[in-house]
Image 1 (cartoon, rainbow, N blue to C red):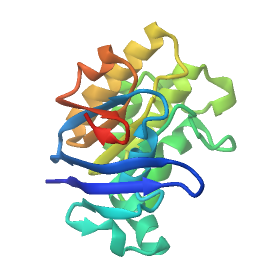
Image 2: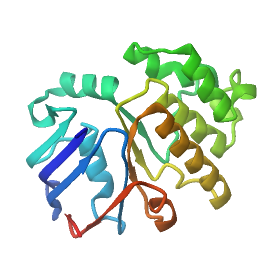
Image 3: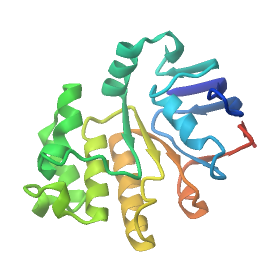
Length: 215
């Protein structure tokens, strides 16, 4: 079991409980879609799984490591070594070229594989764009760079929060197909937040979050 979420609870100060005892599991190499209404806690759960925030009760284990026992340094090391993230916002580094952005996470993790990065570049249709800067790309192109950067280090877990939410349907479909192909090629597990039933149906498993619980 790669990711285990056990009875996790989360409440933000001054607000109603967001998560009220959520439990989920994700196997190595598996793809899982998390659906739910806006405000149901989907993004919160994804952030907790990526050690981006702390939870109030329960436990999350990633590759056997309990997140509750990690300090800020430990959480940062876990994200660097085992986790990659893709969001609606592309979060590319504007001062770096496409090629430099693609290799950024892999360099940080000490797992830069030029052959794999070249394969990603080709399969994502970025070979002619490696010398360009993010501002010179379309939204779909920028999201493909963000996905390539996330997968370049072959993370154990890819967390994706509505990764095609800023794209039109045609671009969204193309980018999702590429991401799923590349996730499976790299052996990476995918935990995807989406509001789209069409996208969720493409993944191995699905969970629905409602009222802070898995429905």
